[in-house]
Length: 144
Image (cartoon, rainbow, N blue to C red; front, side, top):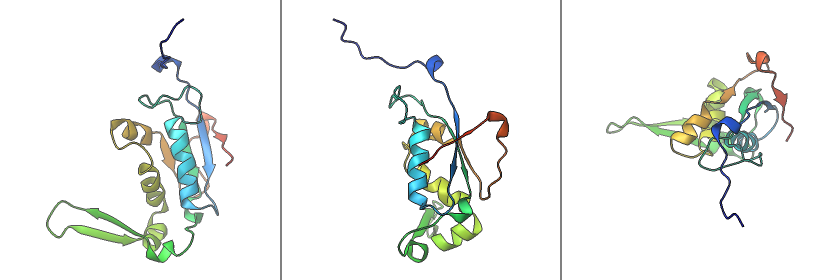
């Protein structure tokens, strides 16, 4: 009896391209689906220490919705590293100015916080409108 665990090899990974339409959907719901696809958790060959995920294109980020009172209460914070360098931006301002950034930050928080997560995030393309530049890759529409 063979008691070895199968581990996928990089040459066996086949990557596809998927399109997610974020129009009139909650930000978090779209982000969880994208994180799942980027990590490869939808595949039977998923291995947590290897990037087995696919490429993801997210369209219509400007039409994403935030449920409850998050539009007014949610605050994005980052620090410059200097004394008094805390910057705060309301979710309403980020969604008006650059909705792609809000989507990318939500997805980034759901991926591993290491070099593997950074590698997964490179396979993400986010667009505010319904046009994208990746027709040559023949992306499939992912329904969720």
